[in-house]
Length: 134
Image (cartoon, rainbow, N blue to C red):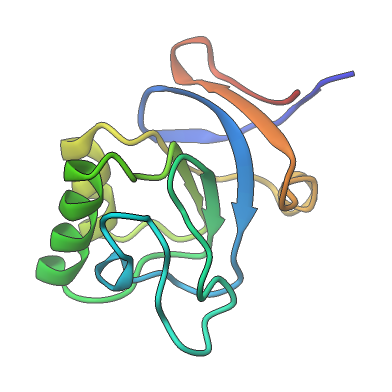
């Protein structure tokens, strides 16, 4: 049985993928472009690939140059996250998501965010205002 989750769209699109969650802000500059693996010592996703996943995390970190460069490099290598769900939108991440056409959402309730655990599969379609666990 599916579970529908409410959200706000920042950058629209469609994705269906596995969730990967982080409690830490993410700097995409420290991901390996050819694998999508995050390399950030002490980060809870250090050594994990973000490629093709629906990434749930608090916010981005780093300057516009490093965030944009990291995401552009991931795109060039086909290793962008399928979508991103964040708690606190920040300008650099919003701009990059819009430019690269990465679905970006926020305003997921605390109760619904608890449902978004590693390995859960989500379907996201912002045109239909749909975010559901499948």
